[in-house]
Image (cartoon, rainbow, N blue to C red; front, side, top):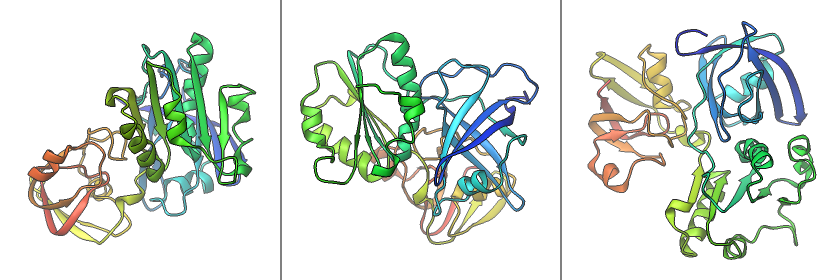
Length: 316
C-alpha cells in the first residue's frame, strides 16, 4: 500500500480472444487486497514511456476476493491509448499502481428480480454480479449483445447458466428490447452497460414503458467522446495555462501539467471531477450534470467535456 493507492503485480496475462486481454493482479507485497463488492471498478495508473494513463476497469473477480483481482480489457484503437498499453506492453511480473475499489453500479439488494443487458465489453461488471447472485440465490437474467464469434469467450465466467442469453445481429438472434422489458415481473431492477447508443436505446425503451427511474441503472464506460478541437484552459488557482490536444481530455491535460484534480470513473458518470467553471462555454458530454446545471454554466466535468469555443477558466 502506498498512501491511498495500492501497488499491484501482474500475476498472469491471457489473451482470451483477439483484442480481449485478461489480467490477474495480486498485491506486490504478497498481502491481501481490499475486498470489492459486485459491480466495483478500480482505477489503474499506466506508466508509458511518453505519457501516463489513468483508466478505470470493472473487476470480474469474485466479490470479496482478496487474493487476486481480475479485469478484462478490450483493445480500442480509437481510445486514448491505455488499452493499447495494456495489450502491447504490460506483461506478467510488471508492477502498477492502482486506487482502492469504487462502486457506482452495485446491484440493488431489495430487487425481486435483476435484469441485466450488456453490450460487448459491457458484460464485465455483470460477471461479478453473476458470482454474487449464484451465492445469494437472487433471481436474475443476463442478456448479452455481442458478435456471434464472441459468445463463447466468457464461458469460463458464465458456465451453462440458463439465466444467460446471447444476442447478435442476425435474424432470430436480435434482442427485442421493448418485448423483454414488458415481460418483467413487478419489483424488477434493470441494469444496462454497453456502448452509448445501446445504453440510450434501452433507457429510452424503459422510460417509454413506464419503468420507475429508481429501478433503472446504467453504467457508462470509456471516454471515446473526449476528443475534439484543440483548445486552451487556464487553471486560475494554479496560475497555469494548458493546451488541450485534439486527442486528449481536459482532465488528461490538467494532469499532464502536474495539477492534481479529483477523479474516479473518467467517463463522465460519477461526478467526482466536477469543477467550477469561471469563464468560457463548455461542451457538456457527461452523464452526471442536470439540464439546469448545464444551462447555468458554472460546472464542467473535465474527464469528458471540452470547450465549445475559445478558452476556459477553471477554479483549479
